[in-house]
Image 1 (cartoon, rainbow, N blue to C red):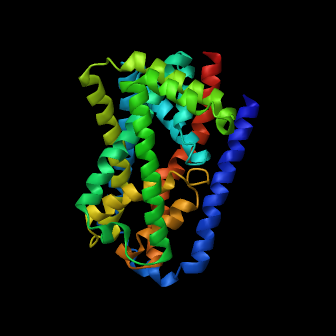
Image 2 (cartoon, helix red, strand yellow):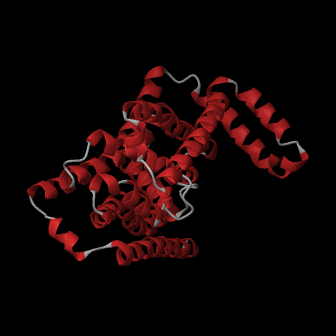
Length: 339
């Protein structure tokens, strides 16, 4: 356990160093002290911070609710929140492309679930997360003028648009694979991928592909006949968690940039989180702050103010989990080792 915690400590340090390093560089490059004159903490701004905290609590409530729902109440609320926080902590110290989903299998098994069932439930939640983006991203794109959603002009905004559509296309394809492999024709997907990875150039990945399709077939056997109410409950919890995460930024804009269009602020969060899915840094450290200050800069009208809001946003959506996980991890691993 000590080795595991030492490795975790290094990951926390690296993630923090990257985030603080990029912020320091951006401050040295962009920040103007006179910006603080317009950064007034009055009753409205204090209320917005409270609302942002409530929104993040909504995110954790949604995911804990989902963990309880997919386990049919086997996990207590306390244990569900612990698994949620540990997954969020893992996401904070690993590249965004890795995220907390694979770790969920590990934490669910530590809560007493079998490896097979933990894998089944994790694949199901992964399908629900991807399905959320597949459904709601087109709604957002159709609800907000294209030029406003992505901004107009500039290499940065042009790159954001390209990355968004590229990643979203991959999400749609991956969701289609998960849906077909879990709910529609799992055996056909297993046979098709086995043949695909039998090709010489792909043969080295065939064992991994076979394990994945085997997990999808097992997941299908367990969840495809679940009642509609079960699916509505777990997908509803997924929507609550993602919407709450986005509303953090709406709360901050309401307090500090009240002139900004709330729907546009909310819609741009879809773009931000899709782009961050391919961030190579732990928890999107550095990339998130840079993307936020540039992408929302036209709505804020001041680069320095945008940077300050980016830091506050990351305190709520990232560093709170980094700190909470660093304190929770030693007790969590010790408890599970002794239990």
